[in-house]
Structure formats: C-alpha cells, structure tokens
Length: 244
Image 1 (cartoon, rainbow, N blue to C red):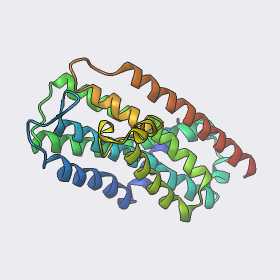
Image 2: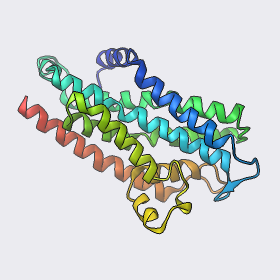
Image 3: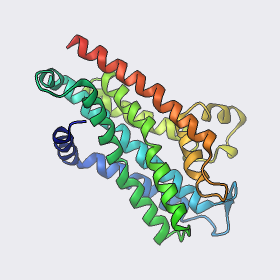
Image 4: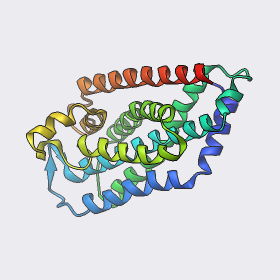
C-alpha cells in the first residue's frame, strides 16, 4: 500500500458526489420505505423485522459503494493512468491493495447512516457488543464486492462501467435476498440466492443480531468469495498491464 497515492485516490473519489449520494441515500430511502412500515413485533428468523431490513439495506449500500471503484479503474485505464503509474515506484500489488482499501472506506458511510437511522427512528435496540459485531462484519462483508469492482473496472469501458455496475448491484442484491427474505422466495430463487455473495454476506451480518452470534459457516463462504473474486481481479489487472 502507498499512503500518499491512497490519500490522493480518496480525495479524487470524494469529488464524485454522485457515487456517495447514491450509495448513502438509496439504502436509506429503502430502509425508510420497507423498514419503518413494518409492525414493531414483526420478526424474521428470530430477528426483529426492522433490524433485519436495517442490516440488509446497510449491506446494499456498502456493496454499492465498494463496487463503485470499478468506475475509477476504468477511467484510469482509458486515460493511460496505469501506463503512467508504471513509471513511478508504485508497485502493481500496491495499486490493487489501494483500490481495495478505497472500496472499504467508501463502504463505511452507508453503514453508519443506515445504522444510525435504525437506532434513532427504527428503535433497533442492540447491546454495544452486538452493534460493534454487526458493524464490523457488515463492513468486512464489502470485500467480495470490492473484488467485483476490480473485475468490472478491468473488463468494462468507461462509458459502460456505470450501467454494468448499477445493473450488477441491483441483480446481486435482488437475487441475494437483500430486498426480500430468501425464505419468502420461490424454491428456484432460493437456490439461485445461495450462489450469490450477497446472500452469504447478508447471512453473516444478520447472524450477528442473534444470540448465537456470527454464523461462521457463512463467514467462511464470504472469505471464499473474496479470495476467488480477488484472484480474478488480480488476473485481469495483470492481463491489462501486460497489454499496456
């Protein structure tokens, strides 16, 4: 990791207010629409329905923000920025790590905003340990989506990366059970859901709301998704660098 380049990357990304607004406002509005209209005593899998929706919408926001780094990568590729970086001391591995860290930093604001809204307006009551665990697991759950952002950034052109990212985010969230509990889906959809990283990140984050704690099996699947997608992203980066 190169700290100076990371700071430069963060400042440049923060200028793109559209990304921040979408990743924060979209999950917040969805939480207010779906979460705040639920009865206080409603529940899903031993979890209050409002808390369930809160975590799901927070995860949707964090994954959207994490995947948005693909647009930055595509723009850099198109502008020849990668070729310029090859003339600097910045190593290829450091470039990829910087992008992943940037994705994780972008995933923080949606989580904070939705969780605060759930606490203040949804009256979600959790212990300090549960809040900390849910926040940490949800944040780390953005890792596989940071890797997806890398892959999209290296296969898409600048003029198509945003539609691809937006559509991918919507499909992954919908099929992964972030908008509708998987138990309420048709049988075929349940099987499809388990083939998406969103399903497992949602399972991991929501399990932290239960007395049993974090679902370690789901967490291992999230780690597996991160490793596989990360390897694909790194391979695409090397292939793109070789052509440059």
